[in-house]
Image 1 (cartoon, rainbow, N blue to C red):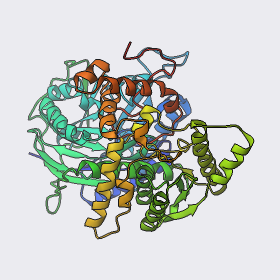
Image 2: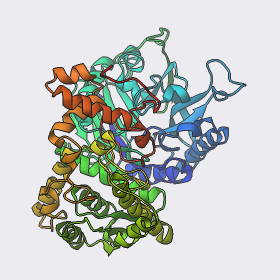
Image 3: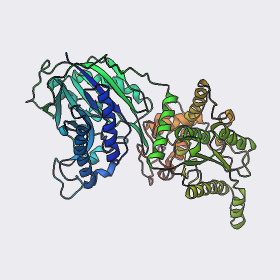
Image 4: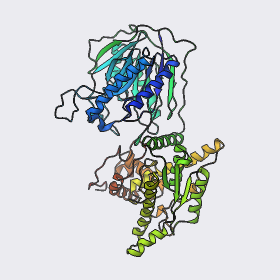
Length: 586
């Protein structure tokens, strides 16, 4: 039985940076070669980054992707790496875009994988299952492939597949069993969601059973706008045994020796069409010498606690949004409350304290303890701390306009937003807004006030999870002998916007431990009123909450992007009309 040394390159590409992404492939292929790898795989659409969205419709971009692939194959050979087969994702097309007037039936853009060898593109594969749910719109962009590409490497038949091919039964994996392959390589751009790693391993095991073959699953890491990718690459044997698994949220080369059946041990029938797919075969090498030296063992990384996982996702999503968009630093308002404290701690973890500016913006209603808590957080984290009192500016407005009640509360929030945006314009910072998912859901924010900003790291984080994250981050710091970044008073005190005397969130909203379960059922679970009441929630509270959610859609549509961590994030996943008279109470 041949042994292949497989290298899975869990790396962080950038959308549109074809030259930079190709350089990543060259650098990590060199590392794989130095580790004695005999087959190396990179993530889905590695050359272009993922998702490229409407860049698919630009013929210039498609042409650049194809040219970059050909150039990469030649460059790998020039680097002395031509004998190492490299699987890499890219954007291809076999016809004009489907939206164009000269579109051809059955032809168009393709989400593709290529195997590069000896300076050329030895084989290509077009993704068969195209996801069209949640954050995915691949039916909008691509046409499905109908051929399973099988490449013989070192005497082992290896099938190429892409991401969603793994998430649906049938198609490529059924065809792979019929083709008698020993290994299926699955390259991925699979975005992070909390607990998705618990689903992934059982899924890979099911596909291994379906294909009767080992599976090498490689996923990218990094942030791309609202999405973040966590890696979690792995190899699973044909019997479902987990052989090796990579860490989450870091670039990593996973190298592991896998014993695989030789080609011909499971003869396939290439004449049959299985689940709409026919087999196309290419030979790279009939045999390879056994890997030199001791066996390569990739090891197995166990998943971490939920809070640690979410924190890493939020840090990576923020870091890549700032760095990939070339912002030098970030600025945010520090109220002394829990939300701004968590965002500040995330920003310091992501960028370092020298790239984070925290601004206290006190009004006449700001409590002394809130000011002290903001200063204490700045001291603990080391960020650039400033104080800009807003009351003189508010008073100027009030001296020239007759305003009262909630309007004055909103005015304070908007003055704060103006100050933060002015600092952004003057000094080049990206403004971070700090509203959590619970507040966004019910519209508990001021447009062009506390909602102002270019990115919201906690946009997809429920308020109750905000508290859990804060407590976890402090405990984690203490475990490592470091200063806990978040003052205990920020965690323990009742939440308040402090826009009027004695104001508390609970004056307007149900307690968050009551509110969040209703919101999770309605937003994430798509439960209607009856389902929520049947789940045990108070009907009057349900009616109030649902009205608030339904009438706040216009606010959410204008909110800043933020890292997705849940099954249904606002914006990317949950898409509802603003003008909408349907209400769950009839």
